[in-house]
Image 1 (cartoon, helix red, strand yellow):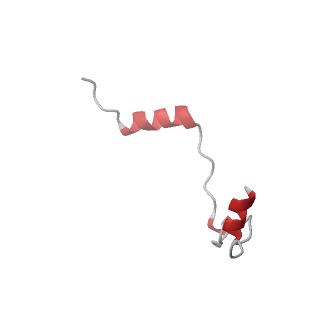
Image 2 (cartoon, rainbow, N blue to C red):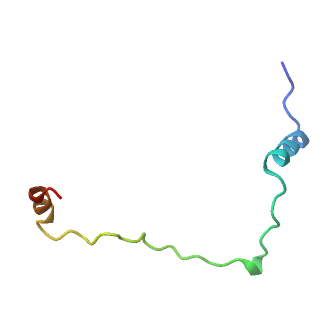
Image 3 (cartoon, one colour):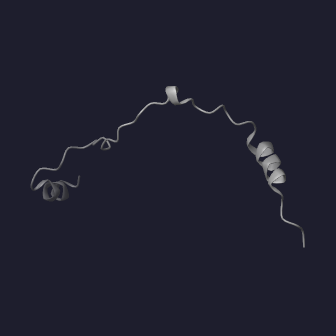
Length: 58
């Protein structure tokens, strides 16, 4: 049974797989984001639209 990797070995494997990390973002370069609702690509169906779509095959 093999011994588990040390932290240094894990760090070397991460570096080999992913390369060098980019520099961290400075606090003054950060921006705030605002959550919004996702865009709606179709308007809300009108009353009876479902039945009309069924009749027309659409």
